Image 1 (tube, helix red, strand yellow):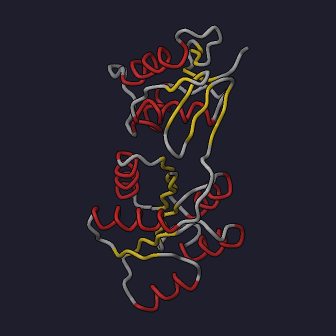
Image 2 (cartoon, rainbow, N blue to C red):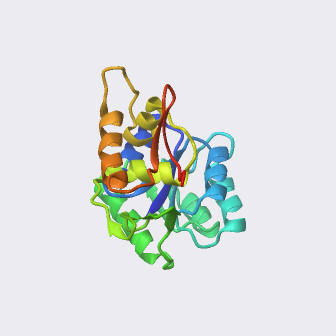
Length: 224
């Protein structure tokens, strides 16, 4: 399941994204209304968590724009405003639920799961590169028809490389996108995880998919 978080306050955005990833979801995070539209137009999401008070475009306008093209994706509003008129406005514009800040994490996750259960069923989102198959919804991977035993972090890293195949990622970029941390010279988390992933994905196969661009970083590509 893929979730888009739209929240302008950095600590709140990072906390929500981290918690949802630890709960097994694939998460993108936008910091303003413009980024929210960019993400929503470029990818399919099973749920959008949308703050009301945003720079560039507020949550109301973001929702109206999204609903012009997408009538099905559930939207959960986050806001510090608790007036009845605000709640009614959000629902009338096409929001599906409303939670007021500050809120308990367990309540937030419960509302997320309820909205995901209500969402229209869709086919599993699968991405294929050569004989590597990723089911992004069930978080399962296969190479040449055989299941790969991946940890959650390994799957998250592999799905990033697969969805953006042919793109070179530096260690610093991978650390930020997958681990949500700044890469330091004494941190080898990226290299260690890439090494494990390479053994699980490529060992025993004539065609290697995970490549090192010396001096630049890592990429996934089918080179025949």
